[in-house]
Length: 274
Image (cartoon, rainbow, N blue to C red; front, side, top):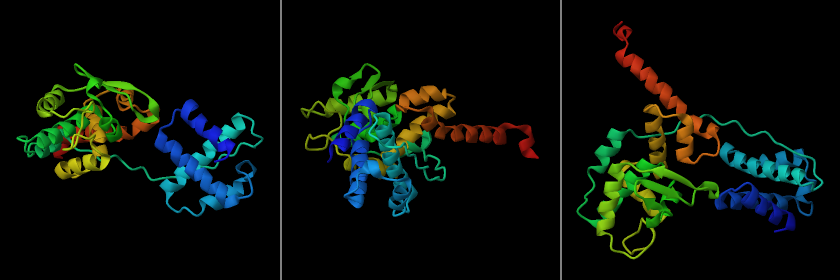
């Protein structure tokens, strides 16, 4: 990797505070572009050449990720005077995908079927309630250590973008967690462990949630946010609890609030009978 990409990597980590996965993806995309145009340098690229490169990616989500890497790189070059004209290629327009979520009754009914007479059953039950009660990303949840829970508060230390946040945990989730820990005699600082006493993997966590709820763990994060919005929570509070850096990201949940209002009108307004 050349010196400019090394400097860009440091910029993404220190100044932009992006997550390691995002940084790795950005550097990988730019390295692929650099290999394609060799011996030409990235700073010598024209907008037309960028568009030719992007034309090979028909999937809009893949395209936008690579666009984000390229635009961020050129902004970096322009900001720090690496002798390059500032280039910005418009993002591809994506259809608005409304977040899938489960309501409380669906979650409660499904997890009531978990056999909690075993340590694994207690873990699975507690994990699902923990995700639903905290709104954690699964990567954040699997990094939680026992010392990160203090009374009713959860400290999320390995959040996206290396940022920390603190969220309260509901008593139901805490009770399930304490029951799991009472019978979990493995020596580890991490909260969620497999039967060998090792930290639970993302794949295993995905299988657990899928087994009982039929969805991915991220749907529980959506369910957490949706429950708050339907209950009347302020959007900025939800933003803080989810750890979103921008309110724009949190606004995808406002449609749920509108749906709930429409349902209320349909259910209770006297004109519904006419």
